[in-house]
Length: 430
Ligand code: AMP
Image (tube, rainbow, N blue to C red; front, side):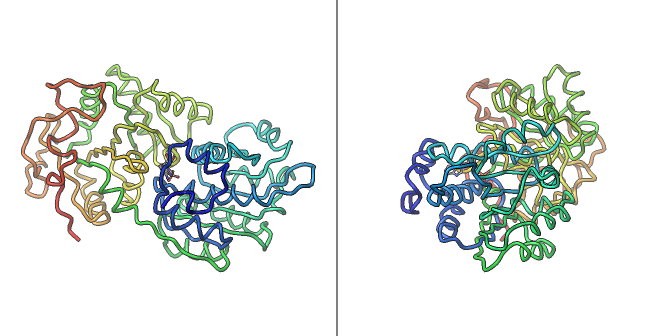
């Protein structure tokens, strides 16, 4: 199936082609026809599946084909609500790229920065707003944004929004929407409170479920290092030194932890930056921009801050801490291996994190391959228990994917036969 088969307007096809998309991803293939048909949609999918294009393209198509001939200021007809600033910016960039050859205009609204620039961007009139909930409500209460003309609404990453405490904001926003509208609701997981929330938004809907959990876990080459807490920094420094040119995203469970990692890396002469909720929006954008442009190789992020990060050529994800929510692990490793690319994700696991690892393996229905023994093994000898024993024998490592790092003698994060070899992967325990 091609995008052309889906019946998308030509200017959008041209823009998609320019993005280098040849075929629709599964969620696009399933969701776009439903949305072009003006039905409501419940999408159970997470970022990395191509869901941004799945909802943006039909909205741009409708906005473009139903344009009013009347002159005058554009009315805001489409609203996309998303949990984080980074994700809002990312969606805005994609929306702009897909609508490049149309006269559909969008703007992005998020907190943490002065509102004036956003207000100025709204002034000439836009067709679509991509917003985080807090600032959106703020501008609504000031009478700067009205939702009365909304015809298309997307609630993106609903589970994440609830986790971040946005439930009341979301309910307030939904209450202000006109009853006649097309509604789209996306969530990676569907616990009870999310199902209830979806009922508030959606009318007669169709459901599309994309199972990226297994898909992501299978696509991304993974490895786990058993390491004591104090040795984690040493192991990180070791891996980064071995791969100085690699573009690495390091996950920390806490903001404080992220700052500490940056400090420790600086002591080892490794340049990095942290992004998390306590950093100003300008600092976050600056760090993210440098990382995306390849000027900064190591970015340390908390889960929420990393949610919207979509960096091409991200060589490696390192879970410095294992997340206590197994789905978060899948989100994290999905930062690499975007769309059809494959990626590498390595995790550090100390004694306290063992239960988290078990939960993760249960969710992804596979065992995360144990990395060969290394010099930063847990000092407390926890490696010695049968449960923790590495399954692979120590082996010489290959070079990483990054072609700038071709040093044959260096140890490295990729096990010898891992890449392109089904054999090196543990059997699935379906
Ligand atoms: P998303 O899940 O929307 O965050 O998209 C993940 C990544 O896949 C982004 O880098 C998109 O640019 C890319 N992408 C989306 N759709 C396609 C497609 N049909 N073909 C190739 N890449 C795509």
